Length: 386
Image: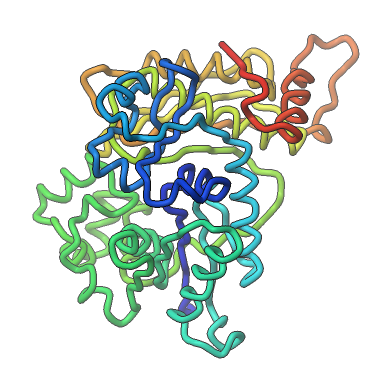
């Protein structure tokens, strides 16, 4: 198997960075982006200056205004953030067509062989990518580089505190991350970590030293794939495929942990809107909605619901997702992320409905009108309630 070189590019404090693009005077100031309006606003993104003041993710605006009057709180403009994201992604794609967009502010890039194309080292190449994104989009990014997605993800996390670039070299994996706590690895949940700890596995080095048969018995094929990825083998490659998706997910970790149900609803609505808009772009319909909550200690709770009518309606999908969130939410827990998944998708060309058959697909023209309005005027022009 040819060794791949994978990079993960992650925009830093993305919503705040976008606001600074439009207003450079916000540089080096404690800036917060919030959803909602007035005293009902909830903080969803913070600059490093705001974090240093002690402002928490999910804190209500009225509280921040009272305790931190020096903080600058700005209503979120999600469509503007998508415009800037589009620009950033196109810059990344100008270096390589092999780019997989993970979220609005994250993307994997397959760098394999580009050192020869650009006649430079991989480190110098990613430095050039980072510099170009800053010069052309004014967005700071952190880039992790290694020979697998799992290692690139870990490297990107470390890059945020290491000058913006961190490389885990294939021949120095154990030396670089061998002592990394296994709980810090993407894909290792709390229960898996507890099982591994019980068997004396606490670090990456402990994990990769285990026999394949043992790992597969304990964690299944996914655990075995994780071992190979941590050893530098690219099991899951960069997928730049643009075919109609079989499912649509939209999720993002919070900057800080939260137990606020109001904040969770706000974030869930944002993810549902993103996912349903992608679905409408494909002229698709969804028959099943799922909500995922990940706790502070990496436990994952998820639930799905089958819809009576396949739909691409913001209103219908938000209503179903909100119901699932209410069932999953535990006020005694702190959460690190929330997400939505649209499953059992069908598309226009697949629908052959009889004239005498009851309506089975809801193509929401109102949501499409809102899409057009957002395209022209931004997300704050109309607010949808549930």
